[in-house]
Length: 314
Image (cartoon, rainbow, N blue to C red; front, side, top):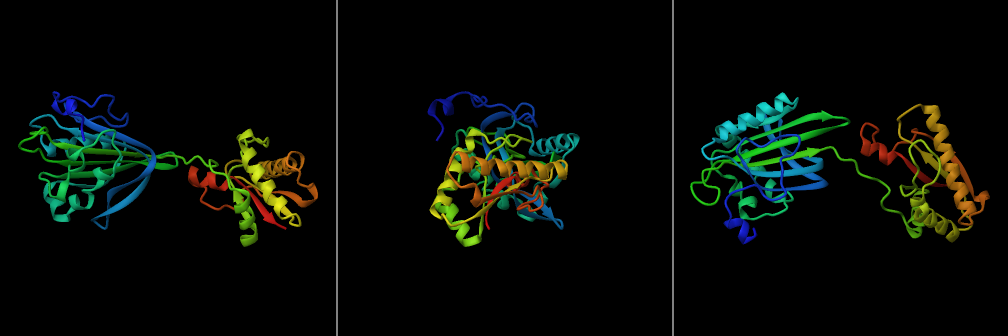
């Protein structure tokens, strides 16, 4: 629930809150609350063959809930957002005004969106913005814009002004921005038991806890835990011989990537031998560049999955 002092204070922006740099509020609006996720999944309404459908999108989420200036209509606010997004190069994915929104039951499709969003402070005025999916004067739009290898999405949903209460006379505006976010791989290492089980079951295992600087083949200190687990798994199965296989994404020259992946695989072999006591005769280094991807190379997240070291049973 809101702190009593805030609820009793004159209407003003939530302390610490600002507009998102990408899109401002409708002039004169009050920022009731805000929130963010560094990476998460949001739902928005898209159009498919002229019909509204709910789609999930993933990225960095920024949430804002505004109350409009008194007497500003939902229609005026809706059309201002739409014009601003188009001017900024966004493609409108779906848009409807009250009559069409009601006909297509759009509000019911998205009434839970504010409840699912993360907020620095929340209350029933936030979670109930579209309560029952039947708030008056509802408007909605979603838009997207290509940014790098992904899309930035914006959705704006409006509920008409209430006749009484703290937000009386003010259109409620739910604004959510979803920006591309790269998952930083290699934050989880695979322990020796899991490595051994993977080798026994599948004959190979991909490891993301082995780290190199870009375009270099020198192991970083952050690789130590993963290298220790690899060594422990090999010591537990002393008769096993393995290939250490280096993989890259498809960025850059193929021949250069082949050479880099070979050097990285060799660096792992040398580290396991010199620092962790694994006989060099049990290991062979191979570099295959981007010839065996496990994900798409069209996104940064996919490329991160492709950059890996694999243990393969010989």
